Image 1 (tube, helix red, strand yellow):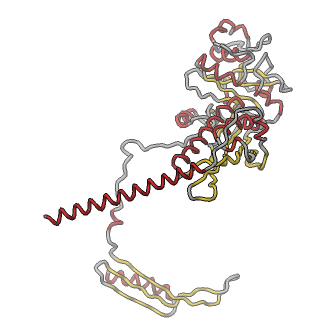
Image 2 (image 1 turned 90 degrees about the vertical axis):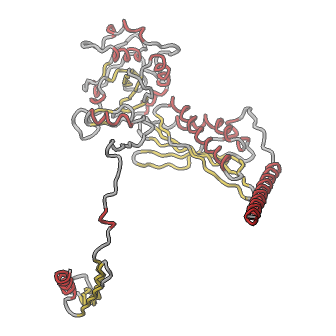
Image 3 (image 1 turned 45 degrees about the vertical axis):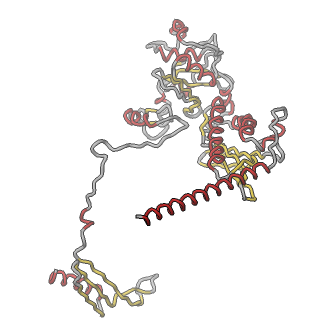
Length: 463
């Protein structure tokens, strides 16, 4: 009993000594780290003054490539030495945001994809060289320039989360300097006419005759508002109050004029103003533009019962635009693929389906035109468990046969073939599950045929 108590006390003393040793090592390591931090140069004070653009410089194109009808362009901005933007990543991203926006706006196309990579250097204790880290945002999709600010904020937030993770979880890492930022842009849907891109800055105005290529498909309702610039209002009202006859006459919709709120929204309505309109009226608005096909320029993220699809048409010069109600988008997408019946178009991702059931099955898994999620189908109840069924694979094999052949190289009679491998002998061993062994061998002509005959005879005779 006494020996047991002594052993317990010795174990306790050993454990306490080990804990003290670990604590002393951690304490010393923390002291060394703070000594190293205090000995480093103090960061420069961030000056929020004038001359920001001049100090930052401009983005410079570094690579241009074409891939599957997509023009991919990379731009880089390197931060000069001794710059005030070397120290603070958040301040640098805020300052460079207008320049990124300018580069993205200069890419004239209907849809753009972009992502951002920031090169940051960190210092590490007892590590003489800086550690370079590349912080990358996810790829975002832009349909119109009004979405650029929100998409950039999302990209910056993702970069800052990764940066904070390095600071928080990194082993004794501290920020050293911001080095550069790279912008990757892909132009997905090109514009056939450069004037068509004016829809980014101009809203729909007074009446424009429907182009013949759209008119003959009878897919839109074009209200003739010849004396005002409120085509957006009349297009929405024509969708909310469809008429059986003469649906293009303005007189049908004047009595419903006050149903829609346009607080602080000026006419003509621009693409960027539709977000505010949706909030005021609880209506989801999709906007398309016709340019050798149906091009989405605005996809609504609002979930509500009232959904309206509008088509923005333009005159021949591309100087004037006009909203019309897109009554049946399937008529404009009839020639998009080889299916020559009615198509059911998903207004979130623009994928056409051959029947309504396929579209309904797709909708729960579709997020938006810019964000796709994988479709995961879980097994039904009753079929969601698996049971082991291959019991035969657990049983010992009653017989195991090991065989080996020897061959001779003989001259070949076939063209383009030098030699043939001709079996000249064999040997095989049959092992039964109880350990009994049978061995047979042969050397001579027709070794392959003799091997088969021998096995068959042995099977019929003994097994």
